[in-house]
Image 1 (cartoon, helix red, strand yellow):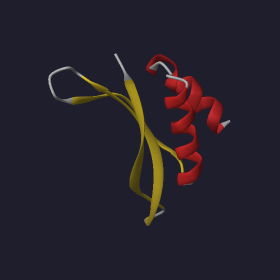
Image 2 (cartoon, helix red, strand yellow):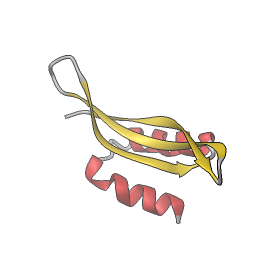
Image 3 (cartoon, rainbow, N blue to C red):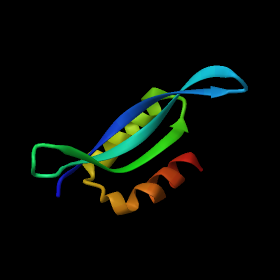
Image 4 (cartoon, rainbow, N blue to C red):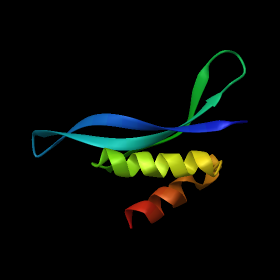
Length: 77
């Protein structure tokens, strides 16, 4: 099962003010012409270039979705 990671742009509010945040979705082709979301972690950070770099590393290393939460935890700490 090939997994592709993508950046997800989110529109949220904090203290009633709009803000943009970014998350990661792990996607896979289900073999029936559909793409399934295997895992999704939202609101990771507010800097698009940082999350794009993380997603690039996940894709280049063929990261298993099982490890996504650990990778994100390391990223934010």
